Image 1: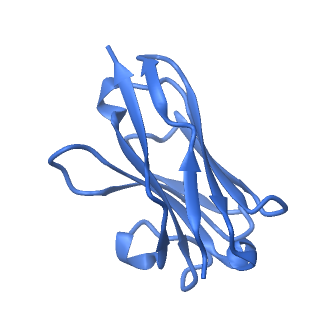
Image 2: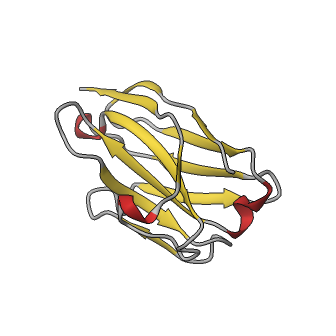
Image 3: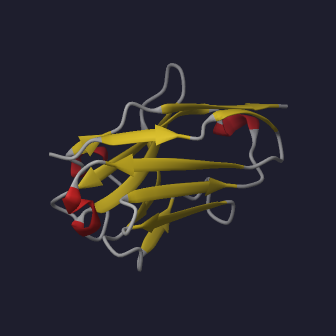
Length: 125
């Protein structure tokens, strides 16, 4: 069993930066693909970024490409999402997820077995 806990969310002005963390309690985290998703009020949960089990391969949604960076430190069983040049439309609850089936990561919500509880990111204009 893998438990994920996100942190690092908050209120930031447009153009600012935040770094989200995703701490895992499971020893198998290092073999799982990892992803970040977000959900704004009244909208579907959407893909943000994903990375492979070793962090060697990453993919991003077009809306965040060039601004967000996903990474992981398997020695700490922790994943990260660095968000730069934030925009008001980035406001959402951000969730991290881990996949035992897709070690290379996935851009689909149904590709993940474990989810965190989410952390709120609010970007003011």
